[in-house]
Length: 134
Image (cartoon, rainbow, N blue to C red):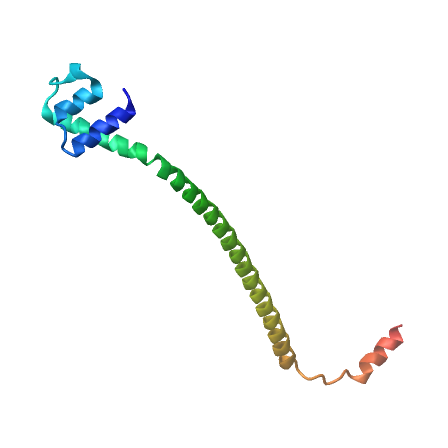
C-alpha cells in the first residue's frame, strides 16, 4: 500500500468524486470491491481520514514539542524565582522577629528598672562589722 495513493483516494472520496467502493478498490485493490458494506466502509474511511490528518500533524507536533520545551524551561525558571522570593520573605520575617525580640527585651529591661525600689543605702554598721571580721 502506498500512503500517497491512499491519501489521494481519500481526498477524492471527500470531494465526492468517487464512492466508497471505488475508494476501497483504490486503497486495497480491485479484489476488495464489494466485499464490505457501505456503513463499514464509511467508518473505515473516517478512520483513515483521521489517521491521515494525524500524519499531517507530525510537523506541527515538532513545533508543539519546541513550544512545550520552552514552556517547561520557563516553568523551571519561574519556580527558581519563586523559591528566591520565598527565601527572601523567610529572611525578612526572621529579621522582623529578631527586631521584635530586641524591642521586647529593651521594654522588659526598662520596665524592670522602673519597678526597682530606690536605693536607700546600707547601714554604716553593716560595713563596720564586716571589716572587723577580716
